[in-house]
Length: 239
Image (cartoon, one colour):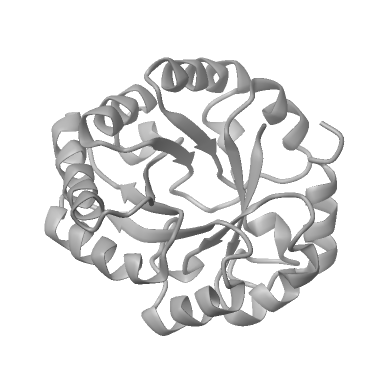
């Protein structure tokens, strides 16, 4: 089953989502949209959100769009584990070869292992990799397996109105999903997605789909609109 992942940036947005807790399952993702595709939230914001959620749904935390910074990634992961997330997302803003991305992921996974955490490591890359000069989906899968990640995520680095489909059509995404599953990985898709893209995406069966911009009334850093959240979640009903 494909699970929606809804990104929030504040305690007030979690409050707006409270009516949806206990309904259709979803993952609550915490990030700072102003700090990049996978911008890391500030500690006090994260603490407030985690307290407000209170374990009522799985929590995902973005650690940033990182370059070759294994130590920085490990320190961020150790701090984030304070809030008992189900998922940690590491943005791999790196060129090939996959070795550098593998080292960043392995540094985070080492922290998870040392802490005995049940948190799953998400290796996040970019569907617009050709433009950005970052790892291809196959390179991401290779790095994820070697670095100990459990899930790969394809997002878009650019947030200028293009969707993931503008860079990877459904047929190509289906191949990536198949490759990830064959490697024993879960896979998520994101990147300016909205209700109009959901039917085609559900057909190719990713493990989760991430949303932010379509849940606001304007820019992705604007506040969530509960009506838009309801409309999106309705797309997942009755699958």
